[in-house]
Length: 144
Image (tube, rainbow, N blue to C red; front, side, top):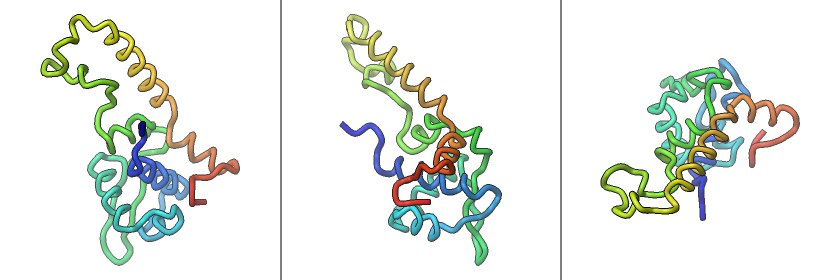
């Protein structure tokens, strides 16, 4: 079972790369090379991150990408939900048109509790936390 999709992994790597270069516009080509992400795929990811308000983009000969907010203001849940949509453990949480058995389901409370714990955990991890880990000698696959 895959919880974090490849595009989300790549987006986290790209955001960490941008976090390592605060206030500097970084080209998609540089991120792709340093993080070993196919450029065309990364460009689509950066568009999604820009639409999600996590990244600013500047076009032109001297254009590039930079974080839209400070790294301590961006958490993993926000990144994951920008790339993959709302975190849900089961389709029955998707509203009134979800599972018709939801009112009698013995697992619903457990799934909801697990969803809340995962979301809470992911909210506690900021992009700054990841950037600092890289600076302390950790690494983002293929990168820095």
